[in-house]
Length: 289
Length: 190
Image 1: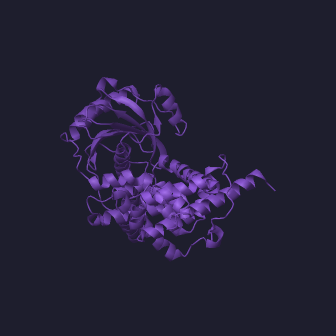
Image 2: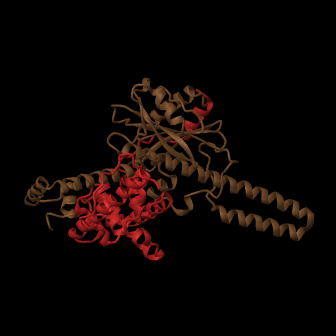
Image 3: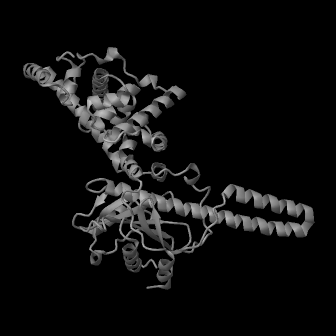
């Protein structure tokens, strides 16, 4: 490499020259004002590149990427449409019959039945179609719920992955100011429950995506490593209310529930018994019960 | 406490403590998503294409997780996957942005140097990156943005270190010239 070249200047800026090469470039820079100006321009353009790309790190990660990183199967990536019917009950076993097969088989059977038996049969067939549709809707809702929980766990992993936590809006002195800031990007105002009695301090918020809409992830920290950081995801939902439910996704524990158009998930590695108590407190404080 | 809470907890099963070792690979992959998106955005130029690329890279990384060598850089391994898929896509689509490429003849070291105005919009910088040839864009993102050494970038791209140096220098010079031209045009609109 010629030490009086742009290549040398760029490598010099990147700290990629050995001692001898660096000394030669130093001498060149000392003797040539044009070389100094050129190096300053190269340094500035590099800084602009870094600055231009930096904001991408702060963008909310799309749900589909969280799903892809946790190895979701293609069929799990998105429900065919928004689910609006099912009321999930904790502990209820839901059918795992593939949606497409279930819907088609019921509809086909019902139609055939109606054709064979005339109007009476048609009536019965329609009832069967409706029944099949309800089952399909239930399946869609279950899948939507699964995705939401998997992604809530995924967002938690993403947030705690950085040493200083990956937080968009840190709480400096005024928690309300941080909440106001994140709320500007959300369809609804968000409040942060006070979890100090549990030894948890509100650290800040991060914008995430839930059910395809912006949602807030509130991050709480504690010195107790057995509890670790916890996050509370609050998002809008079109799904009906659901009682609090315990789940476990990808090594992460969750307590989740839905109330009046909002979905809540308390997420962490702490024992679910501990999470349960906190979630109960949160629900009371946010009037979400 | 409402009956909901009592009933639901009873049905929630025995208490389980999450195992931090569960899905360690997935956790590391999730943690890399912001940087993978940034790298992919630098390559493709658009958010949608970049996210498609990252999604494909995640899927490939998971299916080839056994190929990752413990003790080596996880980020470099993932960048290589992203870059490989992107190159495959470019070849398949033949979508090189020919009009945006900067020829060698434009990159002489005697080109006039102009100070870039601080007011230059960052979106213009991103557009300037998009106009770089793909091989230059790749090393620019790996070294200047992602902070890999020349040797590490060479391993990701699969070329000698000297090639990384020359591509990077051309990219930085071309970028500087493009931004300087833009800055001048903004300062003296027609």
